[in-house]
Image 1: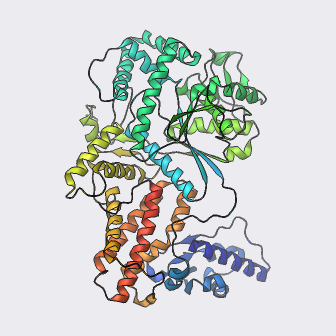
Image 2 (image 1 turned 30 degrees about the vertical axis):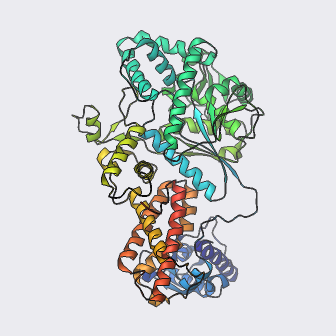
Image 3 (image 1 turned 120 degrees about the vertical axis):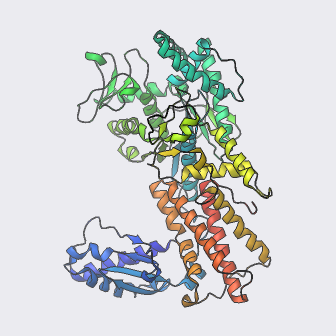
Length: 628
């Protein structure tokens, strides 16, 4: 049970009693906020609810807080967990946890509690890299965020299905195919994706030198969408080979998927045809008869005003072209059909074949499976895709699926760019001395995920004094994953190779060492810890003991906050602070050499830390090594 839930429940009851006694009306939308005071003198939890009620109750906040305090002190749930409540100016209510009672009845558990109710199904789409070249660190940030959200939602009781959408009908794959046919590359490459990386850059350079070559892209796109031609088979072989390399790369970071959804399946399995028929029932979906969009099918904005171009580059204008005048579908059109299917609204379905162990893929000759039909859909896509995501939601609303539109969440995040030093190392012209430089697949500029892992492994291997425990590559993958997760989602990650390969401070390596240290202490204690200990009195707690115990108690609330905000960086901030508090505790408070009574308590506290960090690292997708 979260301690904050106990407080919120008690305050709700107290407010009902207070407003009933006064006969006044409780303000609508009143939210009870619970905070963790920075200083222990202000308690372990605090609420400012009294200050929000001054106008409604026509009393000073301090007086309201005093009234609420009197009611709360009579509440059985508060008596069971807190030993003191105080009012502090200008009207805060501060609550002090009785840690002995918490230890016996409210300590953190590492298993989710089941309510016995059917689990809500969440479909998470992430990674979704164009299958035309190797993955770079920007793609990897997406995958780490998506995989962590999947782990987080599973941990908090949801049924989770993870999808990786493969755009095998897009411009990028067409460009790589054109490059294979019209450019030349003879150097050796370790991976097919690296060859395609070079080929993709070469063909985009060729487009500038020979503009007529871009006509080949349009021809290849037609062939890919038609299917079963020489060019279509070539595109399929390229895409499948690239996807298998992507899966192997992601697996090294602990990232996997349940389903691959190929864009071609949306067209060939009739999902778009069904979606097109549904869209025609709404006046918002119309075919233009004149002007520059003549012949195009357009999804209009709700106010009926807007304009749009025919290319994907027009995504940020008001109306959205879904079908071009030449009959080619835009990405957003197929995405609308895909999302109608995700929510089980199309009345038609894919067929599936095994692509790899425990991984299914849409396939025209596959079999039926119970996939999709989600209650909540989460798409992890960078902030540049906000407009297309909004169009999908508007299509759901236009069709009358308002509940599903509300359950469509776009987890937006900032892109990964390069620092000046790192960009210069890749041959980028940095004479302008900008703060950051974008990666560009078209120019072949970027840090490949596999190359970054190799570099990080070398750094770890060089700095390790002992080679027991996890391999250097496993530690390197964990360090990279943590690095990409710890930034706020909306932050542009300015990637600097030297900073990204640091192993001290707020790094994944520091978290793993902290966990291994706790395991080592507990192993050295050898004898099993008693189920119950004689808790030290509150006044006897060392400041480091108190700080660590209090922060452990905050874990369930942190887990809930990360779930509500869909923000892995909240978890990273928590584990860093938790590990720091534990290491301060370890440095200041002798454990195995302490007196028996103190030693048992500190071993118990170390075990609570280890359990909590284990839970958090598992959600973050990081290993929990007993030795490093």
